[in-house]
Image (cartoon, rainbow, N blue to C red; front, side, top):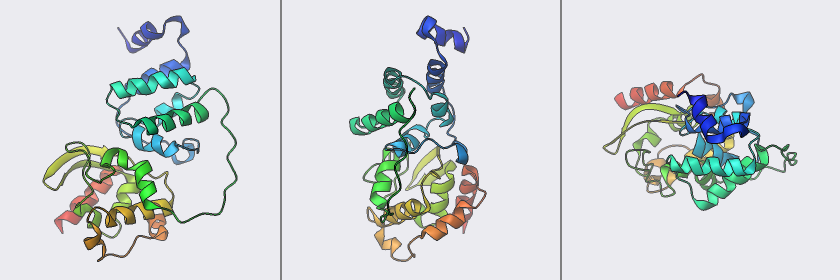
Length: 246
């Protein structure tokens, strides 16, 4: 029985392009990102999509599922939870609200006019983009996602943690005697100010501040310079190997 037949058996005569895309989402492979010029629509909750979804599959599958009805998005997220998605009820509600509003069958609302930019709170950036994997307390998930508390990688080089956030990380690493062999997706949808703020936040949280006192805070200008670098997640892993060997 091929893949389409399996889907057809689930949806019967009502099978649509959207339901096929939903089923494909459940079988997605390694984490990839959308092209920079093909990002998801901006809106409340989009960062939760980036942080929760692309740890397991390409966001292109989310784009391909655009047009699903609200009940289909409900069913899809429930299926993702059956496959191991861990998400709080609060974040799940925000994710579903985003998907139904911006990725549903109706045109999304027009973007609101930008207001004056306020100082970026790194703790908020972390909570919305990183805590799902690394934990609100920075302790990670043993065997799956490394802890950031007491993680010397944060200080391997002036720009290394910026490169990890911008370009992702793929390959085996050891953190505090625990081995991990997975992939962190690129979070390059974040602005230069947001990436600078979150790197500075994690460098000063959970007891990391003693080491942070010896390095200058990351600036948005530094992030912009690193954004221009042509690096992949495996390139960042190779950079880590270089730095740890020094």
